[in-house]
Image (tube, rainbow, N blue to C red):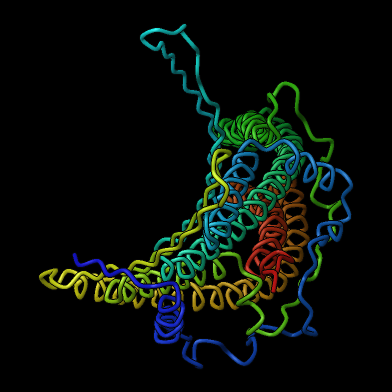
Length: 458
């Protein structure tokens, strides 16, 4: 590899010329059709949710849980360490843009003794202090794209940390809601069990009176036991849900519990999306994908620079206590690889292919994010309509069972109808509870799909 050295006057001129001819690679842009003009499922005013949106559920316990998760979650602690590591790397990359300075100080001591042929022995010696200052600015052209790549990696880490915070807090809220759902199901199961036992007494009385078959009593007894077993299973499910949520706050399940008993105490907050184009700055995964695109662009710039000479500037000076003048010198060197069997060309093509792939990944992330919002909006609308229907179904099922039970007691209704009416009511109650949980989870989904109140710093 030939190396050319230039005078101090020639180097700056050539450096400016090379920098002028080494402009950054243009960043690929999204096609206009990838960003919709508006949301099809939005019916409210355009307003992005805020980070402090969680109080809208009207639950102090939920807010306390979220704060404990933010403070004690072990995964979030690791995420913060990773972010700090990325910050330190960015600081180093920022300092690397400037020349490095070295200072070397040393002391010398020498001793010499002489004795003339006819004279006495005499001692001699000298002390000296040397101070050398050096400046190194190697590979000048590559420093800017390297810093751009480091900046992109840091911004990606920022977005990744924001995504982790939102994801873990949302999972904690969902876990809290599931515990309340299970306790609602336990309450409904206790109601179902009491009702099944009351019907069993009616069936037994008819069997004892000879107006019903013994098999009807046995079948109703199975219904009672099924409800009792369902209650025991629900209690175990509550323990599992508590254990999962306890882990998110870094505690043992035996030291952790929630006071809430029902989903009915929770409000269902509204979430309205803003302009779709703003989502590009509010979704952490989109910001990460864009950062990867910019890092790939920096790789292309670095690959292009390999076709240019490698420029290094060095300088230094020294001062010795035994000398009367300081020494100063500067050197600029240019190293250009001429024959590489096409390696640089292949490297540049590979970098450009990676840039194209990162653009496709970016587009896929953006399109997927817009789809997430549309689906979440439609989901909330559908669940709201279904909730009204399911609430009516419970009222109708309760009335149906009351009528069938009365007719069975009078002996004018078949037992099969009684069994069917019980199953319908128990299923309607569970469906209504499931809908309430699904609605709350859908609200969390739209909140996270809109970025959870986060926004990339401009």
